[in-house]
Length: 229
Ligand code: ADP
Ligand code: ADP
Image 1 (cartoon, protein in one colour):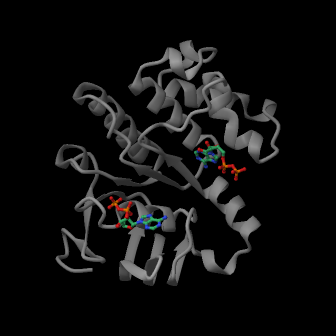
Image 2 (cartoon, rainbow, N blue to C red; image 1 turned 120 degrees about the horizontal axis):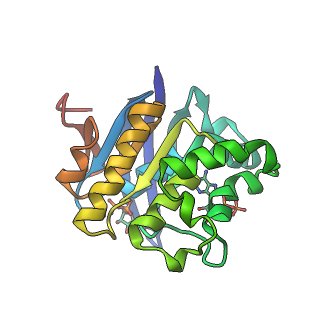
């Protein structure tokens, strides 16, 4: 089943007088359970595509469906709820809240959603076990290594049990050993929990953990397996 569908998707940034057409007529389908890597030159629109798909940014034209729901048909408030429940975001620089503990960082999407922690306690414990950070739950991010911080971010992304994980260069700030650790974790989450994962990456090594590569170039998308989009 299609998890992410874009149709005639355009994104143009207006820089003063100049219109920069970043994405042009993107028609893309990503199915449930896929682990997709978006690759392409710097500035080609990889992050833009990821953020559009996750509802963090609005397209100039065209439509995006997430789990069958048309994003443009939703109000701002509905979009924000959709984002929190259906999508977990992972960023290159982790985006953790520095003065919150590991546990509270992981609980953040739940707390922002106004949910009570108690009914989700067991889920929290399971997630902390999955990312192997149970013994670090009372630490703050600055007490952790980069790889551990990214594992907290991945745990946070899982907290609302979303269908989709969107990761913007999740290992861009990590050394090769830690990169492997984080990629194995994402791969495990994809295989064992069936989460659809879309990552932006520069590296062929990290793309190898996924099962499909999409190239963004000159505003277009090229599917490595099928040739053209
Ligand atoms: P990538 O992730 O492939 O490096 P981005 O999606 O970040 O590329 O950016 C694609 C293009 O859009 C770049 O030329 C960038 O400068 C431009 N761009 C990105 N975000 C904005 C913005 N908020 N305002 C104006 N231009 C932007
Ligand atoms: P607001 O809409 O009030 O600005 P945000 O949605 O930006 O709040 O969330 C605030 C913090 O919580 C951010 O640091 C963000 O990374 C994190 N967060 C919220 N929802 C998610 C999610 N679904 N996955 C990962 N992190 C999230």
